Image 1: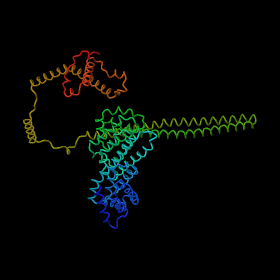
Image 2 (image 1 turned 90 degrees about the vertical axis):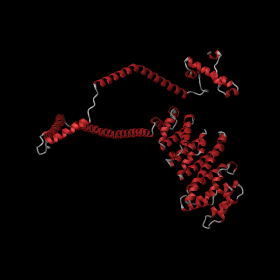
Image 3 (image 1 turned 180 degrees about the vertical axis):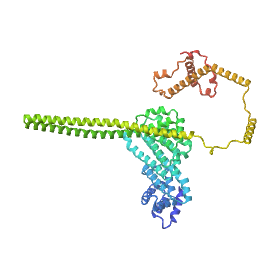
Image 4 (image 1 turned 90 degrees about the horizontal axis):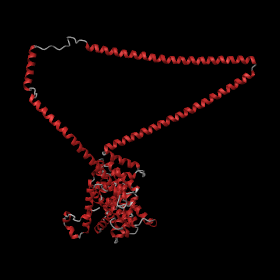
Length: 576
C-alpha cells in the first residue's frame, strides 16, 4: 500500500496540465492521507467523477486511463480487503466501492501492454476481493438471528450482498474472458454451500446471468470445478425443502445443461437416483422447469431431449390451433344461427300479417264471393305445390344424370389410357430391324472366347467338399445341436435366477434410498428392513455384537486388526 501511495504522489507531481484536475487532486489526497480508514471515503468521490462521462465515450475513456495511470484502481482493489465493520458507513461503503470498481473496469481502454497487465493481474484480483466482501457480508448476515425484531439489521446487509453480486456480474459482462474465472472461484463455492435461502438464491440467480453473457465459458471451465458446482446444486435439490431454493437450483441446472450439451449425459450417469427424488417438488410453483429437468433425465442425451421438447412444442401448437379453429367455427355458427333465427322470425311475422289481412279481406266479401275467393286460393296453392315438386323431381333426375355422365367420362379416360399402354407394349414386342441387330460371332472369335473360358476355369477351379468332409461337418453340427439342447434348460434356469437376483437387488437399493431417518423410523419400517432369513439375521446380530464389543475396547487395543479374527465363544450372544 505504501509503495502504491508513493507512485501516486510521483504521478500527481509530474501531471500534465491537460489531465483532469479532479483525478489529480484525488490522487494527491489519497497519497497524503495517513489513516487507511480515510481512504475509502476519499475514493467514494470517484462516483461523481465517473458520472460526468459515460463509459465508451472519449471523456469516459480518458478518465479511466488517468485512474489507471495514477494507480487509483490498484488502491481501490486493495481497499476492499480490509474489514469494513470498523469503517464509517460499514458495508454500505464497501458496496459503493464495489459499484465504482465495476464501473471503472467495464469501460477501461489501455495500451496493449497495460491491457495485458490489467486483464492478467488487476481484474482477477478485483473479482476475488469483491467475492471476499460478499463472503464477509454473508458471514455477518448469518450471525444475526432471524427474528422480527432484528430484521432492521439483517435487511441492509442483504441489500448490500445483492448489490456486490450485481457489481461482479457487471464486471463479467464487460470482460467475457473473466466469466470462467468467476465460475471457478473458490469463493463462489463457499457462498453456495450455506443453507440460508436469502443468501444462496442470489448466487444461484447470478450463475445463469453470467453464463448468458458467454455461453462457451462452461466448456472452457475445468471439469472438476463445474462438477463441484453441479454437486452442490444437486445436493440443494435433494436435501433442501425450501421451494425458492429448489426453483433456483432447477433453473441453474437447466441453464448449465443448455450451454454445455455434454453435461446432460454426465447428469444422467453421475446422478442416477435423482429422478425419484424430484417427485417432492411437484406442484410447488415451478412445474415447467421441473418438467424440463425430468425430460433431460429421461432422455439421457441432449439431442434426444431437444427432439422430445420439439415434439411437445408441436403438440402444444396443434392443440392451440385446434382450439382456435373450433372457437372460430363456433363463432361463425353462432352468427349463422342468429341470422337464421332472425330470418325465421321475420318469415313467421310476415305469414301472421298475411293471414290477418286475408281474414280481414274475407270478412269484407259476401257469401258467394267468399267461396269463389277460397277456390282461387286453393288453385294457386296447388299450382305452387306442383311447381315445387316438379323442380325437386328435375333436380333429383339431374343429379342421377350427372353421376351417369361422370361414370361414362371415367370409363372413356380409362379406356384411352389402356389403349395407349397396349400400343406401347406392341411397340416393345415388335421385332428389331436387321439394320439395328449386332453382327454375329465369327469362328475365330468363338475359338478365342472358348480359350479364355478354359484358361479361367483352370486358374479358378471350383472347390466342392468331398463326401467324407460333408459327413464330418454334419456329424459335428449334430453334436453341437445336441449339446445346446442338453444345456438349454440349465442355462434358462441360471438366467432366471440371475434376473430374480437383479430384481431383488433393485428393490433393496430402492428401499435403502427411500429409507427414513432414525428419528422418523417406526416399527413398521423396522419390520420392512429386517430379513426373514435366519442365517442372515444371525450374521447381522453377530456383527452388531462384535461392533459393540469393539466400541467398549480401550484405544490401545484398536491399533491392530487382531480383534477382527476373534470368534465369540459366548453362546448367549446368538440367542434371540
